[in-house]
Length: 325
Length: 112
Image (cartoon, rainbow over all chains, first blue to last red; front, side):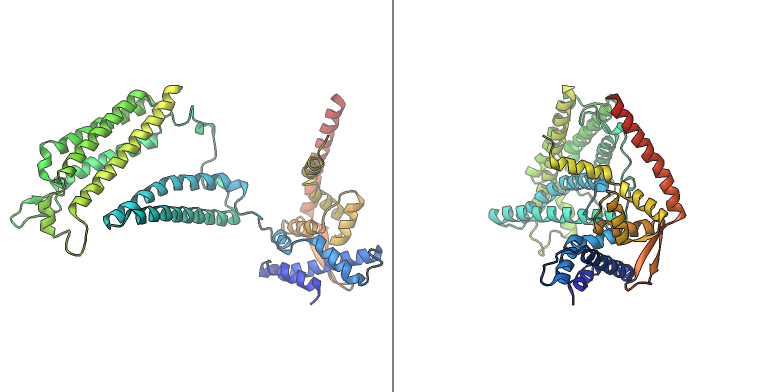
């Protein structure tokens, strides 16, 4: 096999099958023409094996066969080009911000329920979060690399940029989506509290209703929680109407978050958040699981705590930026 | 002191796009095969690497701006390209732009 044969074979192995015959003939003619031109011009007259020396020189000039094949097939020589790069970066960063904190909380919590040692919990949390992060970046990148090769235009992935996307100052304006999400969350939370009482999961043999939450809590905790949620909803709507975040917002939100946290924490610490009668009736937790009702109550408290802290933190950073302008 | 790398980079920017126009115009004047076209371009001072020219010709052909026939009259078969009617029309359009840019740049030169 001559050098030219090897060069052509290397190029064709990266060329779509349909184009191979054509590219091969084209390429062989190109190489032979280039060698002939050099022979005629009298290049390298003293080389011992002139023909082969000229062949080497020509092929070196043609360069990397992979690059040549990509040029022939009009394939991009990049993973994600400037057309899609910004969308790729935004989506990757957004997903990392959403998914990694959840993983970093869920892994240690699950292991804590499983009575693992502190060292194992820390190790698995770091390792697991890293693994999920690497997977996330990989799969997003893979999808975008495919979109790049499919020639998907950027405006199919997101609206074209307009000045309306400019923020007066980062995060100062109240977004309608954020308000809607906050109101929906509050409404769903309140509905769940009411619903579990009015349409109970189970009833006893003699027809007594068995809600999920301890019915004794209706004397104070649950109505107070609903009241806190109602005030929070008013604050959210008022903020949307006002259009910006203020320090007053932050103090009110902090007070409401603390109130909600205390209202949930007190029954959890007294082990009477969940309705023990219901769980006896349905026979869970049974012998097959090591989970206890106390642990489930702790999960509820931790979720409420995380949400409260995130809410207070988000409000604080925005109110601070908003009050600066 | 003007950096050689900057000169090379700017020159490449300036030439990018002119190669297609030159190929279309030359092949409209006389049909030709790859290596011979390379020599004609070089003769005009428009040096281009062989590994860029061959894929470029193929792309222009896929876009319908060039047509080709296999020339089997010699020892090795060669693709002989000719500029199509579309290609010729494109040359006319681009040539106008080219002239406009040249005129504009000359005017700037006179004012400064």
